[in-house]
Length: 397
Image 1 (tube, rainbow, N blue to C red):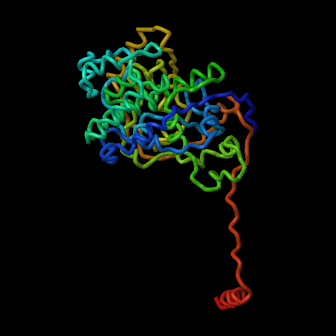
Image 2 (image 1 turned 135 degrees about the vertical axis):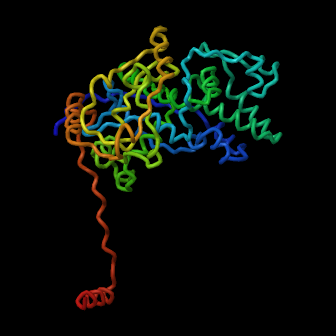
Image 3 (image 1 turned 60 degrees about the horizontal axis):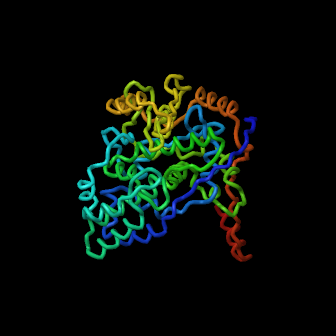
């Protein structure tokens, strides 16, 4: 099937410099306890990412439906998947909106285990946002580690990861947005909002630098790709675009059984889908398109009303919309087996026809590539005597 071609855009996905942060991992005396208390943050520091994979993924972004559209399937990161990957549940509270105030300096200093004078001397402003330099916070981690203050070390180390990796803004700086989200204990909606918002904005701009938690997006996408050695073999000489364009919906690893009993956040308040408030603005995402990723069937094209899109930059003041979104998060609608039926991780023909038609309309950024076939098994060498013995055995059977 000819899906047509659209131009490939140039995107930059810059990972923050975290070499010094990685060195502090050894300061965590109880890694398992740290994971229980703060989530799987350390896994993002140690993740090895293959060059070009995410640059290829973002070429497939569909600005109409806020997802990634491929020739016969769609993929999109969800709240539930991000929560599962980081082992941080989505709290039943209104997520970060940008309107929250920081605690008073004296209270904040206490929460961050700092003396008032130390706080005052190091709480500075960069890019219009107050915060701390990473160098200062790393020094605090090293100091408390030398004193055996494990609880404080974990707390400040987690804050550094929030500021430098989860919510990167200014290099080497942990700003007040990151601090507020860290103290809220509910980062997942904001992480997902930043992912969609940055990719969507750069798609509209025709390219540029995507600013979000790159390791988490990478980890999410890889979780859906085939694990076969043939597909992942770098020696094949195939580009990521060729490997991805060789896939069909039957090749995708659709969902993790860990999510079997999880109820999906399907909509919020008056909105037919889920509005997300990131650090750069508001954007909606459509859980109805991700049902198969959570173990439920895709039977037909979802109604248009469930796919209505919202996109608002933080510099485009719309207090009314922000108020509506905040109110909506007070009325979260979750759906599970009772509402969605039995688990059936299948895409049915009416839905597939709609996706194929959408792919033709949207056009693909790369040409179709034939499926990657497993390498044929090599016939083991057998000495002549062994061959004769094997042949005699086969004749007796």
